[in-house]
Amino acid sequence: MSLRTRGVAVLGLLLVTGCSPDLPAISDAEADACAELTAALPDRVAGEDLSDDSDRTAAWAGIELTCGVGLPAAYDEYSSCSVVGGVGWFLPPADLKEPSVDIVATALTHSPRVSVVIPAEHRGSDAVLVEIAPAIEETLAEGEPCL
Image 1 (tube, rainbow, N blue to C red):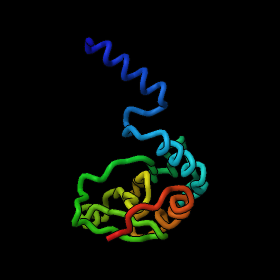
Image 2 (image 1 turned 90 degrees about the vertical axis):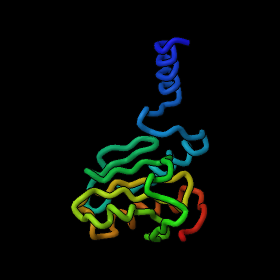
Image 3 (image 1 turned 45 degrees about the vertical axis):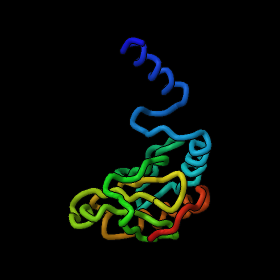
Image 4 (image 1 turned 60 degrees about the vertical axis):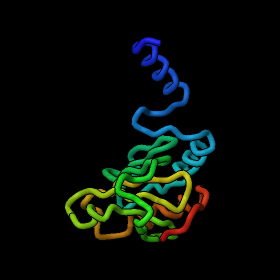
């Protein structure tokens, strides 16, 4: 198969499955769970109005949620997570040390995993995670507890 043919086949698969090339592939069951989650998300988070949503993503200004993500690169079996709103979140330790940068929180205790980009201006408060957590708890399967 030529490179061009392979590229057309991949593009066709992305169009058929409705996935963005930026999102990792997930199963049909995970896609259904993600669609349930995004439908259950609040219209406002941390004072920001919902500005964009799809079956796997949502955004409130600079706050961005993605459903069906892999484990964060900084995560390993010795990493800890923090329970906020009943959901166990992993926050990269290096990013926690730098309050002026955006941080990506990843929900590890539910499946499929969810990541939330929290802009620097919303750090210092748990409001973003607290307001998103009920939808995660309501719609996604509970997995392993936080360590």
